[in-house]
Image (cartoon, rainbow, N blue to C red; front, side, top):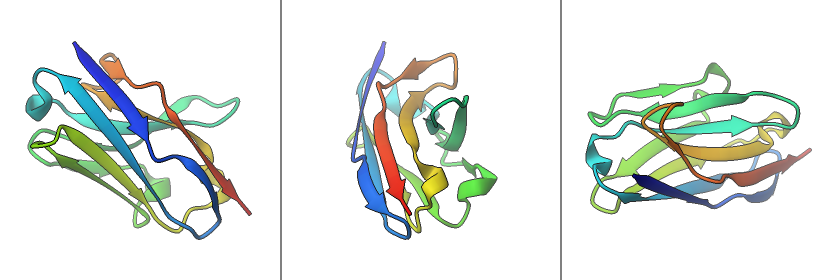
Length: 114
């Protein structure tokens, strides 16, 4: 069983930055692939970034060069640094462990104003 709690969302102007954090509890964090997904109103939940247990990283094309995912296995934490935010980044951001069929946090809202 894995519990995930996101934090760090909020309201920011376009061009600004936010850092999301995800605290994970439960066993096996080091072996889990971790990811961030987002869901805008009326849209499906999409992958933003993911990092495997070996450190392989993938990003959605829309955030490449602006977002950075990282993990701290000693602290059971995953982060998403978001720079040069755009209004289209507005969404609820969810932390995920073990892929879409795995575990989810409750989400944190990011609102980017133009």
